[in-house]
Amino acid sequence: LIMKNPTFKNDENIIASELFLYMVAGHDTTAISVSWILMELGKNPQEQRSLREALSKMKPEEWSKSELLRNVAREGMRLHPVSSHAIARELGRDMITKKGYFLQKGTLAFLPFYVIFRNNEIFEDAEAFLPSRWENPTESMKRAFIPFATGVQNCVGQALANAELHSILARMIYEFDFSVEDEGYPEGSLVFTPVGLRMKATRAKLTMDDNSSITQCWQGWADEERKFGLEMQQPYSKFVLNGQKSIESRAYPLPEALIDAKIEILQSEKGLDGVSSVPDRVTLNKSRDDNSSTPSPLKRIGWVTFAKCIQYTTREEFEADREKHLVDPNSGYGWNDERPIYGWVVGSYHKQDVVDVDKGSVNAVAVRRMRSLFDIITT
Image (cartoon, rainbow, N blue to C red; front, side, top):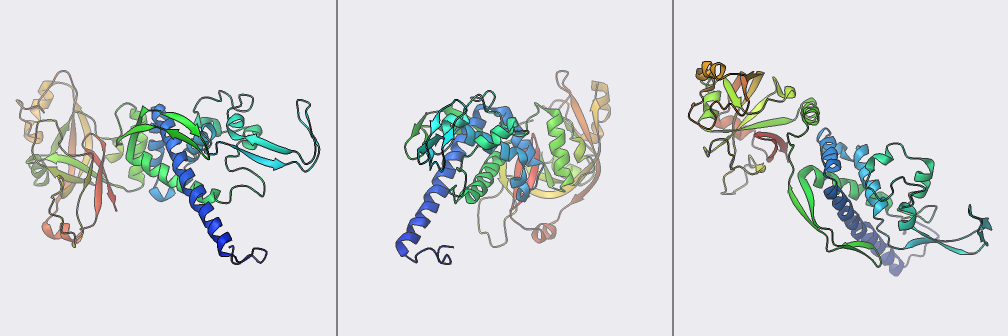
C-alpha cells in the first residue's frame, strides 16, 4: 500500500518504520490483550463456561462470528486497554464541555482510555467484568469505547488485531480451561501489561453441572454431524461389536441428541473398574507416512448406535438384564443403591476391519467432552 501511494515517498526507511509499527502494534499488543481477557475469564468461570459452550455449538471456521466471543473481547479490552496512555488530538475549534470548561481551538487534548472505560456514568458497575453489557449497549457506551482510537487517525492495524484476538481466544478457550494462580500487578509503560500473571490451563471438557447446557451442546454438535466416540475397555468393547452385549450400562444417561447417532468405539486397555487412564486429548489414527512408534491409548475398532436409554430403578431390574449387559455383579460396575445405573440399548453395530482402518487413515484427535464420550476432530 505504501508503494502504491503516490503521496508517500518511496523511502526504505519509511517502509521499514511502517512494517515495524505493524509488527509491534499488531502482535505484542494482541498477546497482552489475550492475557488480560484470559485472566478475567479465569476469575469468572461461569463466563468462561458460557463462551466454551457457545463455541462448541459452532464450526471452528465460524467462531469469529460468535457474538459472545466479541462481547467477551470488548469487555476485556474495556477493563484493560492495552494502551496505558491516551490519545492526543489538537482541537480544531473552540469547545465548551458539559461541565462548563472552555477549551480553545489549537489546544492539545489528551483522552485517557483507562479513565473513560471505567466511568460509572457511562458503564454501569464499571469495575465488573460483564460481557452481557454489550448485548444492548447504549449510544454513550458505543461512543466511549474506542480501544483503537477514533477518526481518520485511528489504529491502522485494528482489523488484523481483531482477527488475531478472536482466532486465538476462541481456540484457547475451546481447548483449555483457565484458572488464575497469581494475578500479578498491572504496569504501564508503552503498553498496559499484567506483570507476574500466572495461570493454570487444563484440557477443557463439559461437566455435569448444567444438564440443560450440556444437552444444548450435544444437540448442536449432532446437528453439525460431528463424529463422536465412546471409550470402552476390552473385552466389553468387542462384546458389543460381535453382538454378545446388547446393553451398555453406565452411571450416567446417554445424551438425547446421541440417540441413533453413529458413535465410534474407542477401545482402551482394561484398567481399574470405572477409572480411565486415557488422557482427555488423544491422537487417533496416524497418516500412512507417520513412523511414530508410540501407540495410541485408544483404538478405533468399529461403531455403534444406541436406540434408547433406560434407567434401572431396582436391583431386580438390573439383574434381569445380566445376559444383555454382561456386568459382573461383584465388579465396580454392579448394582449400587447409592448411584443410578442407565442402560444404553444397542441399535446397530459394525466391526471395523483392518482394511476399513487403513482406508480411513487420517489425522484425528479425540477430545473428552463428558465422562467416556469424546468429540472426534479431524486435523
